[in-house]
Structures are given as C-alpha cells and as structure tokens.
Length: 323
Image (cartoon, rainbow, N blue to C red; front, side, top):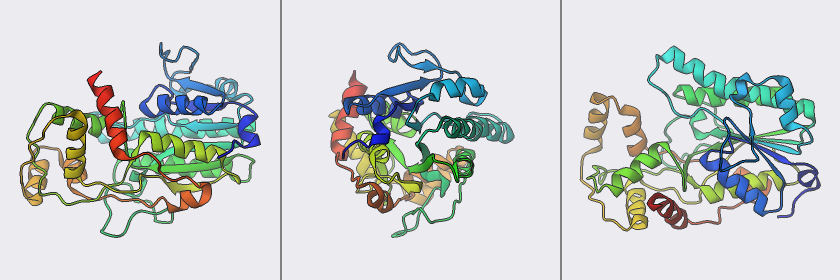
C-alpha cells in the first residue's frame, strides 16, 4: 500500500517505543521509509535517539508539544497493562492515570499540533473477557469491561473521541487481543516458561477459541492505518485470521521450542474451582474460555489482511527466547 502524502509530510510519533510492540513497530515503519520519532519513559540504550519523557500523564503541555512538533501521526502504545497487588481503589487510580489521563493529554497536544492521525492501541478487554460461540466481539458491541485495565481503555477511547471530534485529527482505536511474538510478556511469557520447563499442563480437556494477533501482523495493521485513504477512524478490532485453542497454542509453542509438552486431562469445572481456591480465577478463565473478535471492519477500511502465519511468529518467539 502506498504511503499517503500526509504520512510522508512529517514523522510518526510512537509512544511506548521501548515495549515489545513499540520496538517492532519502529523497525517496521523505518524499513518502509518512514521517519519515526520514538518516545520512551526512560532512556534506552537500544533506542539512543528516543525522547525520554518520563510518565506521559506527568508531562507538561510544553513537553508534549515539543514531542509532537511537525508530526503527521501519533501511534500511542504506552500504557499500564498489568495489575499490581494494590488495593482495588489504588489500582483503579493507577490505571486511570497511566491510560486515561495520559491519552487525553496526548490527544489534546496532538490536536493543538495539527497532527493528522492518532492511532490508539486499545484492548479487546474493553468488551469483556469472554464471547459466546459464533458471536465474536465487533465494533458496534457495547463496552463491558470486567477489570480496571479494560475500564481504563474504554474511558481513554471515549475521551480521545471527544477531544478529536470536529478537529482535523482523525482518531482510531484498535482493540487488540493477546499479542504473540518476540518479547511478549504477561500470560504469553509465563506459558512459554512453563512449556520450556517441561511442566505438565492440565488443559487437554479445554475446547475454546481465542483470537490472537501476531506481532508482525499487528505492526502491518498499524502501518495500514497510517497509510489508508481516507484515514480510518472510530473503533476497529484487529486479529489473526484463525483463532486458537489453549491446547493448540500450547502444542504450537512446544513445536517452536523443539520440546514435548505433557498435557493432562482435568475437567474444566475442576480447573475453575482450583483457580478460585488459589486466587487465580481470572487466569484460569482466560485459559479455558473463548474470546473472539471480528476484524472485518478494519479490513474494509484499510485493505489490511493478516499475512504472517502464527507458526512463523512462534518460530521468531522461540528464537528470541533461546537467545
């Protein structure tokens, strides 16, 4: 897809450039000939040219204006993702500051700077944690977040839409499911560690469908959002074409690592009971339940289609893990 005139008129500002998605996206955009202005929280030897702005929610309007000066687009990846063992109210405030307040401040700065496109990395968790068979989440489904992270992304989307409404800045919220690729953290990293260690995993009885997105496909999708004419706005989902089951993903990761994985049969109700007793109810729900999303509206708006198969992404993940 050709670069638009707007896209070539100024740099693309990428926040959260030191993260798993950020690093890959910066590399992807530069390989396509774009000028990228990477923004990070703290100085990073791997990105020596990056702007270290500290916490975005604490940045002054003047600092943000300097970061966005002359930019044609913003890709806002920086976010608080994982909960900490804080009290619920403190956790809620922490997510709101990092994800809602920071996004609003950046959106206001983007409008003031005349930035043409604002791509916001949101989450499928805005819609909830589970879907029914044959009913993937779509852009017109009502938000129903179940945790502080999901609520913060929902509220950030709403503020972004309000701030950019009636301005030349086109805002796009991409609701993203589980990202798989080199450097992925959280649940993916824990699963890879368990498989590499040869642990017996009790998920042979699970029959679920979960949408995921490979890192390379996600970077291609963001690049498509920056290229497409007219610029896509509103809310869209993005995911790989084929959902995976938990046992299928475990076996695919094991193949990529060149190890065998013992899968034990445990009835799903028993797994859920164990999760509740051990304080890991949400983790077990994710591993046993389904969550599918529909990317067709984004494909219609941009022409993007996932081109990289999951096995290739897992091979890259395995190579990075072994290093």
